[in-house]
Amino acid sequence: MSNFRCIAITPYYKEHRKTLERCINSVKAQSLACEQLMIADGHPQDWLDEAGVRHLRLDRSHGDYGNTPRGLGAMLALAEEYDALFFLDADNWLEHTHVEECLLAARQAFTDASLCDYVIAKRAFRRPDETVMPLGEDPGHVDTNCFFFLRGSFHLLPLWITMPKAVALFGDRIFLKLLDSVKLQGATTRFATVNYLCTWPRLYLSIGEAVPAGIDPDKALDPRPILATMKALTDREREIARRLLGGMQLGF
Image (cartoon, rainbow, N blue to C red; front, top):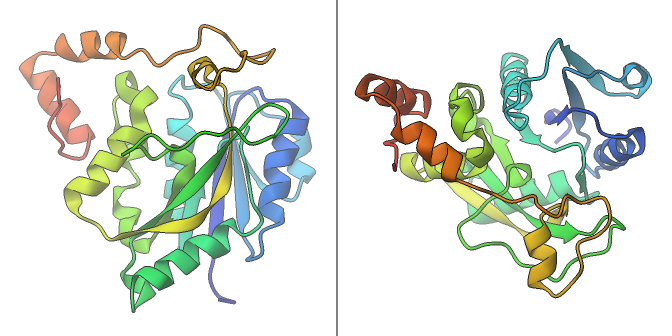
């Protein structure tokens, strides 16, 4: 694996330095070497230039939940011929075996690991104090942080830039639907290696816990504005949106 090159792409916005350091340190601690590209979505932090990561500064915020920096980082990784890449949001962090477990999943799923196009990593939901919440994954859902892309899926990565901003909130769901539609070959890790900071009030309430301080109690996924925007499209606008979504038919 000495020639294997992997990179984590991390969009950041206005997160505190300690939050970014937790994310960065988890990538540096990987049992298999992995680089990291931090991408400022309009609010660069200068200290990152000396943090042992690559640092890309975008001159403005894009308001698409990190999709623009993700897509730009992915395109850069493709141009530089990395073997694997994944997205890691700035407030999340990894177990030290994340990359190793993803590659092991690919080898265990296929006699020839090169036939594996992508891996789905499992995640642990974490409270702000980093303790684990007793939550499982929603059936059929894969969070953005849990995709691990190998070369066989690289041709789909431009979707993170091209998908219309109106649907960016549901980007991970849209990307999973695209993966399923083109029938790529995937694998799944054995253990949770992604630590996901839970900021969704409904998940705390679902296990009988109070919403922790610092988490917006009104935060929720509301598809209604998206549905209204997409339903208002003309036939021509709808066709263009379909093309920008990788040829998928709009379900509304």
